[in-house]
Amino acid sequence: MNFPSKLIEDAVSEFEKLPGIGRKTALRLVLHLLRQSNESVTLFSDRIQKMRSEIRFCKTCHNISDGEYCNICSSRVRNRTVVCVVENFRDVIAIENTAQYNGLYHVLGGVISPLEGIGPDALNIESLIQRTHAGEINEVLMALSPTMEGDTTIFYISRKLQNNTGIKITTLARGVAFGGELEYTDDLTLARSIATRLPYENYLVNRE
Amino acid sequence: MNFPSKLIEDAVSEFEKLPGIGRKTALRLVLHLLRQSNESVTLFSDRIQKMRSEIRFCKTCHNISDGEYCNICSSRVRNRTVVCVVENFRDVIAIENTAQYNGLYHVLGGVISPLEGIGPDALNIESLIQRTHAGEINEVLMALSPTMEGDTTIFYISRKLQNNTGIKITTLARGVAFGGELEYTDDLTLARSIATRLPYENYLVNRE
Image (tube, rainbow over all chains, first blue to last red):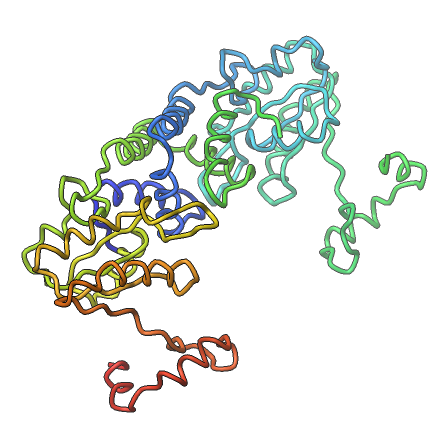
């Protein structure tokens, strides 16, 4: 597809670099912006640039942050004795949206993956261990994806923490998803959810 | 969905304004940009802002252009006796991509639509009439969508041009699309394509 203008061509090729956006969609977005006022397009581009250049990472939990420490770490109403370990800040957003968790976070920045050459040193694991030394934390909730890499990372961190007897390590409950059809649940999940079956009273609690 | 950062929030809300992009996709795009280098995000935002602020419209055909006149109008190899009338520059791009047309264009900027309050004065029709007065043009090809509004616009322009006897007015051929299934073709198109049926020789020419 050729464009009558180098300016359009450049803008389309920039949008095209985004995930899930092909050349036709990119052109549609560019033509949409072309119909907007100069001011609103300037706002669009400024906000994106500012987002990238001014974003910072919380010194404590490595979550994205506007300042030195993120809103969650600097909050006074949060339970400071529980730390939820997640892969990235998208997971923080997902957990925050459940409104079920009131503790702190620790963003690893990935999971251990020997295949991709990601070792423990490339992740924010050492700073997690340091945090637990302060003595305030008594539970580390592992909220990593139930993949080989996630499980390896949980195992690695739990080994690192095992000397600290004051800390309880927990993981997210695994099982059949609410609203999920039993027949479409994978074998492993189904098998594990039978092996780790719950008393009915607990089930009722979970439904609330 | 709440975000831990005002910067992210702002960037997501900007992406969300684009057509076909919801909050989740917007977040995905923002997080993608966050993983890119500062330089490449600056390039992204600069190119988009530059596109909007520096884009110009060709003084002759109203197509988008980097300069005073577009590449097509200033080309020396184009057939200057045919003008193709289109609704917007997306249509120019579509026709250019067929590589079947070597004439000039005239971008109306829309079609006559009384329901939406778009009258002939809101479109680049007067400048089209002016162009035909110069005497160089001997064919006006109406390449508008086969809608009520498109047909109204073609009718209006053809009335305006009828005093100029040196100009032939043509429209795009209507009929069953190549590769289209006959049974799924709408009644009107099928009826019209029977009424305006072609000698087999012409069909062979079209297939080439």
